[in-house]
Length: 88
Image (cartoon, rainbow, N blue to C red; front, side, top):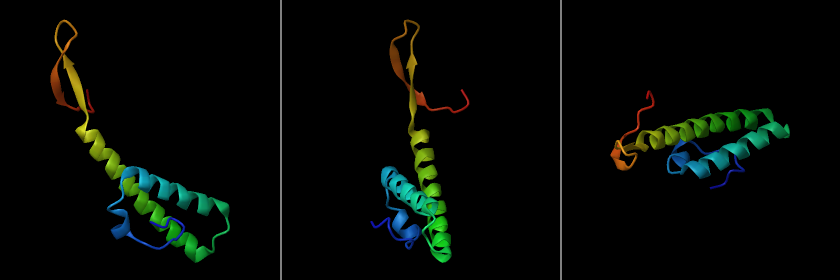
């Protein structure tokens, strides 16, 4: 993976784990903030950053869906698990 390039697309982002996608997104932001990138490349970097952000958010959402909370009995001892409920 070459985060130094603006190129690439969703196809090269899809197999990334969260940490790799976040590092690539940080590199995109760093390059954009440097101000040393030509306009056309800035636009490509911005588009890639948007895809990386979307990918990271999807990974976080998937992880949150797998979170289980520990159910305790009356004595405060773990008695099992139940699916994560963001509302409660």
